[in-house]
Length: 242
Figure 1 (cartoon, helix red, strand yellow):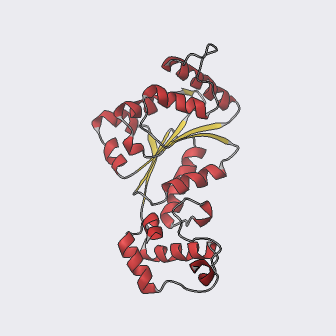
Figure 2 (tube, helix red, strand yellow):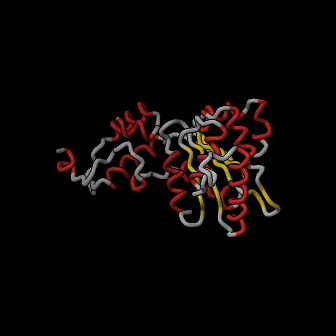
Figure 3 (cartoon, helix red, strand yellow):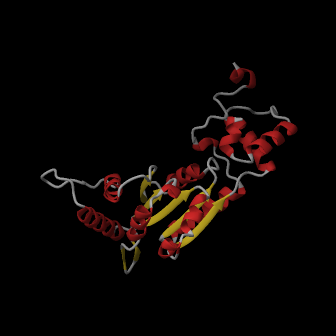
């Protein structure tokens, strides 16, 4: 009923990550620029952090849409894997067969060889390969070490695999652990995504209303916007929920 009353063609505050509704704040612009720079300059490790619901996944989708057809990507959503399953997941997502001709599972060493050969082929074809890991703060020490070792795959022309770690602010604390100093030294680009400011919250709300079909009416009064900003602390997902 409220759609018809306000002239909406769809719900303006859905929680799914529809790129049409994405609002690019100043901090989103900066985070996106960091990611594009890292890809274009073939940096080994990129770390992007931010609170839950600040738009990290939307930034990934935006980036992948820009590089579609020129970049092969592996997007890992669940970092709770064993070392072998981690390698198998990467190979499988790149279209590689992870079983031998006799249908026996490949060993970890075989999977590494398979991946290395594939990455070298991609480099010869000038194709970029990117591994994106969501919720990277949940990676076990063993898997974080596996990720670091993957960046050892290189030739004289550069790294064969680029890695983007996306995680909550806890990831920054995890990486300060002395056991990860070798990994820290390989991080070329890092950025922390900040919540929306008060004015950006107003713009965010108006942007979503416009995409949903609102053309002229100012539905939320300034006092309401301020309350939404205060209660949400500028987190887009919380704004949608409110």
